[in-house]
Image 1 (cartoon, rainbow, N blue to C red):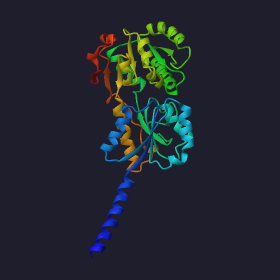
Image 2: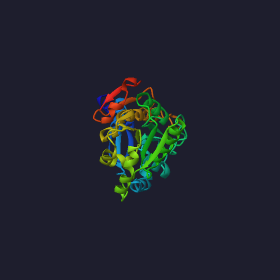
Image 3: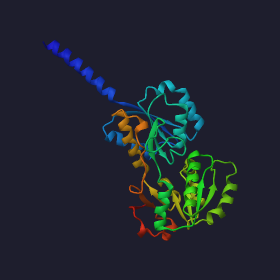
Image 4: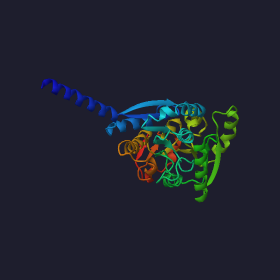
Length: 317
């Protein structure tokens, strides 16, 4: 009798252990410039939701060829993953173009997923991936800025080498002109050999603008000191992500990277637990209702803002 009970216990224990092991999800996290608060928020929220995961992290190191090589060489390995997470536009587009071996894909910190071809629409992505936008729609950001600082001419600083940046400047320019604003396109490629020549030609154009918009661009983050050096501190500047605040940008309407990570985790949970299909999960947006106004307390141009007219919560950084 005791032997039979012992055997039953072992069999039961074995089944239980197997079931628990099966619940551990295997997730590939592909970063563009190392782990950020976006990934930290993503992992923390999944744990909070009760999802145990084994993470494999691959950092592209801002090298698209390296990322493409990794994906091509590991197609069979990808099939063992339950989910793939990508940071940024270039990383996500590369993964989509090469293929993820049928594994669901969630993306994060993408400014314009529809415009760059990552998704067909925000409500129904339809191209095998869903995720979170990092910034407000330009028309919403402009309207919110008008409340606290009316302007006529906006300079848009962007990197013509990055698709996300080009997409953003196109839409920003169109929205500005539709609202009777003058838009000046300010090209800056921090990785270019003749960067000093670019900066020299940019400075007078920057000084001619009422407002300077800094596009969401990984190259700007990687060369943040350059942005800090070229932005006039007495001209209001607005960024699409909070990471630019420490580099001299005056204000940002949006959310923290950590919060975007949590938003993606909620979508990932529906895929991992409820077996939802990314195509059917709406992309998490930043809206006027859930945006915060982040203000750089050390920027001289803050004194020009009529912050008493702001409709959103204000956080000083």
